[in-house]
Image (cartoon, rainbow, N blue to C red; front, side):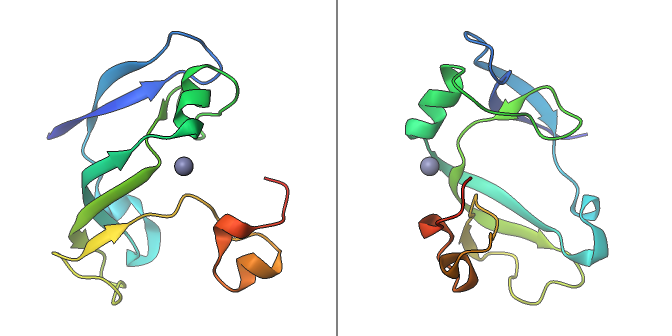
Length: 118
Ligand SMILES: [Zn+2]
């Protein structure tokens, strides 16, 4: 099994910043062949990460007790699921962290401008 390193916190617990080792994600973990495996090349840290580290807010993904920080990233596609036609290995990508809400901005793909309460 291939492991990778991640910088994580225990949400809402000051002083919990640490490096852990995690198994490399598998493309089949995403259903319907829509998985995309990206090798992260760069990660940006910003005020959100500082606030997470200061335990001001934050939640772990369901089933985990930690949260990986660095939500602004740039990487290269390593592998795509069978149902993915929009990307191919070797493509450079950046991920969005927001999920579409209900505002007009969300509907036109400008999620960072949402007027929804987050
Ligand atoms: Zn940010």
